[in-house]
Length: 326
Image (cartoon, rainbow, N blue to C red):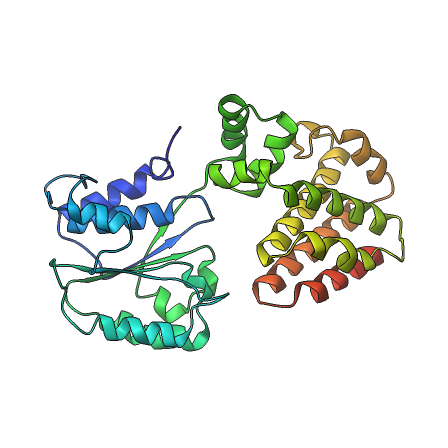
């Protein structure tokens, strides 16, 4: 099975070239969805700089490489969200740490994981650090949504875009190498680009239960059932205990409505919910394409609000009301 890094040969070759030719920028922004190898590539980048055998790709065996892989190298710092965001105090602590020279090597590397979760105060504090880096410092910022990165920070970074494997590729992998059913593999392959997360979805109880809740909620909305809004607290939030679970549930909804559109367009070979064709046809009889498109817009707006930290119960209840209004 290909590793996440092996799925990004263009970026790996680029990193090797800039290091070999001594054309390093001081800051890079890795953009791409989960499962595309951003963390693995950042680790590889640091290993390539600090490996005891610098004339070769990182050996992965020397003390430097092993310590970087274990996240305990004194010259490689990881900055991650505390709770839902990276806060200004975290950035200030990192800036203090980088005020001193590298302890053991010629380079110091700062890897900011989920950089798109920085608070505005944290981002503004980081800006000066990015503008005036210490010599021998490389900053790697990893993010899913580039638009959530402060534009003045973005403009000072070299952007590298990580492309996810196609859902078809991941679906085939799950079926052929892991023995998953076509229906199961089809859905999870559209919800994540990460093989490990896809396999986890196939095994954990909340995922299957959330799918059941989502499809029932859609059914209730289409029937204009006034009790649908109560399903948010009584069912959805009892299953989706984390923000990420609600995000996954919204994606499930989005793909269901897209399948309704595909059924109407005669594109059954493109649907995600394999085995649900009859249910989709029945629901599609009462919906125009305009209504389906409007519903998808409402779901996308709910996802944006979720990422902006709006309370899940509030945005889901409002979504249900909008779906029922059509």
